[in-house]
Length: 68
Image 1 (cartoon, rainbow, N blue to C red):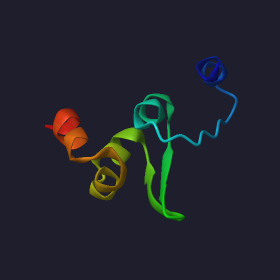
Image 2: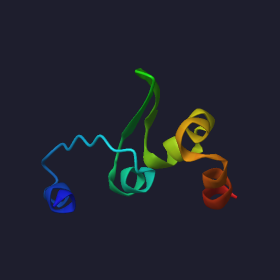
Image 3: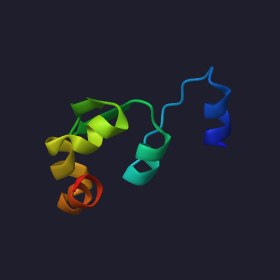
């Protein structure tokens, strides 16, 4: 359903999600919050490459698998 809405191109969708695979595959822009503070904001590639986000949410293995 979200992909159908996204395909229309004229809507903004706000998703609060902890499954980073879903977030990375569906988002144009991601805002990562940690303990109520914005940790990072940007495109999925920028978020995946951000060392603070990797430590807080993605884990060390994500960086090695996706950016090795």
